[in-house]
Image (cartoon, rainbow, N blue to C red; front, side):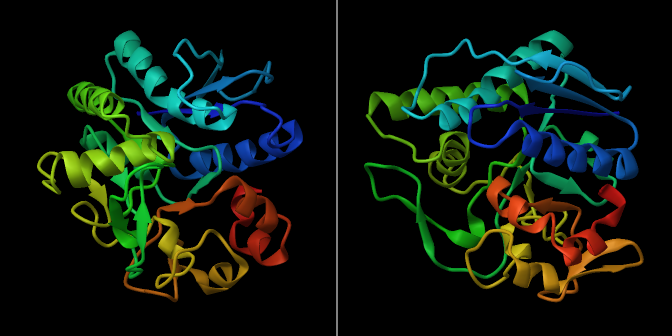
Length: 273
């Protein structure tokens, strides 16, 4: 069984109707492709959901706010709840963002105790990870925040790393994903021992990051990228690189909202609608 958790929390950023629509896409993609899974959804407005694979829990945040932004604090809280779930179940839960579509049976992630996802592709532009320091990472190697899995030792090490950053007054730009980027590329000095990165040193034949939308440039989900996607033997691929498979479709919520009513989107992802 694949153990997953996610948030479906209303913070006046997207409507409840939009949140539910995207959640249903995500759940349907799990039901079709993964089948045997347990998904815990932390929410502040959904009361019932008719699916035996899913448990609804009331969203909570017991941590101190790190940002002057409700969304960033919500996003950072993923790691706090990972720790609580690990303590409760003694299992390493997989985090997956709500605005994600699974197109393959990713139960193989049970075989490893950690996973990270890089953007991938060929883009050599540099991305900064701090608000007040100039450390950069090449876009194609940048770690996204939409899917990841930790083990408890890795969690503890990340918290130690974060405390050192706080002590040095280094302000991460994007909550957890920039913590992951700093940890992997600076704190660990690109030593990938015991760290699995999709498309890099783990399942190298996959293109699960945002480069699936444009393999040469930094972008989010877009119509041009959608036009390049196709199914081959029921496996999603892109004409950007037809040697790679797509098991996870990475969106941002805003970009998914611009696409999910388009006919081309409905034709490609008809099973999940």
